[in-house]
Length: 268
Image (tube, rainbow, N blue to C red):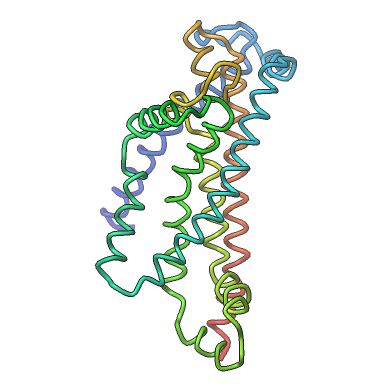
């Protein structure tokens, strides 16, 4: 191993340590029987038991999951349609403009997006709550799906569509039997990214949620302001583990979809 590769390895270790050390610290003290984050007095599952006995928290967790699944599913459908629309725009100038507009929501600060949605919902008369949160999550998830799907559409050869047309395939056959199967990895990637973004979002949700409705991120913030409670540590640990499972699930789905393509490339 040369000096450059050693330096790169050390640098990556430091970066990952900085990123994960606070999470591991939080997870470690979620098992502390002492009730503080200073001295670890003993192992306990008391705080996890309190999480599952908290009816309000369970309802909020279900709200968060429903919002995440609905927004991910709807934004995946809209994102695939948007990516197809961008791909079939013939003028390069218009195509680049659409891609730039798609990227605006991704690069814009969450505070600006949240405030914009709040003003819009107030003007058009949408009550803050489930509907406003769902619409906001769909809005900031669609550009993510588009970005995930576009590369798969761009790498697909036009000869595949031409061959399907020569064989008598209709437009629906081309879409359902050629295009969609080819871009399936991008669709899965977009869905999982939209799901994790929805589960983790705080800034936008904080602006558009109303009285009587909350998500886990907003609830954790509200409870953390009232003082340190290891129940928050336990809840945060559970959320992190769920997110980790989603990422691992996406990885295996991606690997599974990549194997047939790799086999097709190796086939003479």
